[in-house]
Image (cartoon, rainbow, N blue to C red; front, side, top):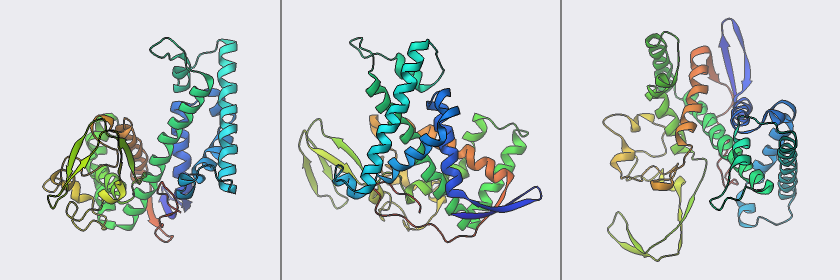
Length: 319
């Protein structure tokens, strides 16, 4: 996704998709990985995670062990990532070196029975955390930019909001300022509704219950059954969202709030209930930080065609 940018007499063309993916990888690595990886192996780790993402397609989801070239590269990348993190863990433990990061916290963690997490468990959790922290946010950042740059009305509104907040806080942008960026928040939320990073959520029924359709028909859900929540379909239900295939951040604004009017769980991109995504607030915040900075410091114009959805992925991605 290419965009023309201009700022303070400088101008050029940038691949926003590539750059935003890199930025989110840097953020995730800063929060989750140790100094050893960030300073010496980040380029390799970033490339390996790219191979993992490429291996997340609908076909490999159904047949995860089929020996396709994509799956082989995915598995090879997974093995190498475990080697890198295992080496880092052992180096810290042998030297007594302690860092302030998520990797160290996992190394120090214990289960209820007092058992420490194994190296394999730590590697698995850190890989999952990096993927969860990087992929959905980078995808949403890209779609947010694509939609704003293709919709002048909302781009102008988001820029004007930044000017107002900059003036109010006298150029000292902090957490409270980001909380007031309602227009930008709605632009991000609408991009999430249009292109949710995860097409479906899975849950297991711990007790029997009933569900009712909008027509009033009831279905019994037996205890122990698995339930699939199709987020990508839920987010485009016409009886919940007016003109659901149109990008319209105002649908979440005062007086409309279509996601609330439609019911408690109309917007399920982050799940809901007690198992709602714990990283939801962080995801919104980091995307706001990125686009707030870009909107305040650059003028953009989308010069490539509007990105298409790669429907072969079980996670929506721009291509």
